[in-house]
Length: 188
Ligand SMILES: O=P(O)(O)OC[C@H]1O[C@H](OP(=O)(O)OP(=O)(O)O)[C@H](O)[C@@H]1O
Ligand SMILES: Nc1nc2[nH]cnc2c(=O)[nH]1
Image 1 (cartoon, rainbow, N blue to C red):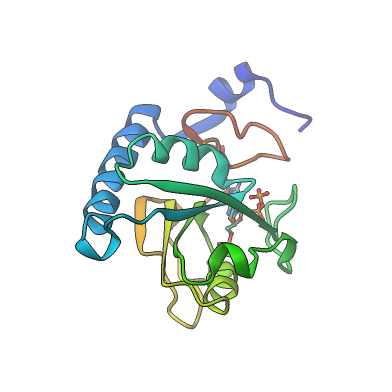
Image 2: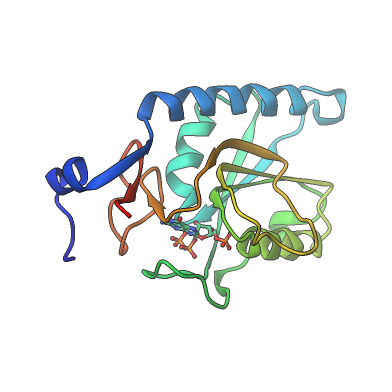
């Protein structure tokens, strides 16, 4: 299929998670994260939020609106899907620097935890740069048994999703439609 129109999306895809469900999940997630960083340990400190480009951009923007502590916003870029629906080797485009991570309280923000290889690699990359603390948060966790053997999991998860290739809310279909405010999947 060539690039879908907005009408194609309404007619020939399945709505997986509605805009209101997403908004509610993000607010609930923000409450949990606010609670975590409200501790004495983080008083008078700014937390460094790394947006995992490109997919994490939409969620980072939505989530940050509800966070009630000071954030220093950074980004990093690693990709293993490109425009494909299948993951391959992780390709680093922008790595976090030592200056950005050493001694800092880090939160990694991404759209989806699917096979988990991307977030695990990013987490390890940051860990090696010796942050003071590190957490990861994803909007959705895809439900299947192909997760990292190490048992690595994100610290905060918004919603669970079915094991289908999904798009919207930052996630692309053939490079496009990251701008949709709800999550869709192609009809099976
Ligand atoms: O859990 P995994 O199976 O490793 O997949 C999750 C990753 O896949 C997507 O990135 P992608 O490689 O598509 O790059 P993008 O963010 O630029 O779309 C998504 O944004 C996550 O970072
Ligand atoms: N757009 C999109 N990107 C992904 N990266 C890993 N899983 C997915 C998915 O289901 N959709």
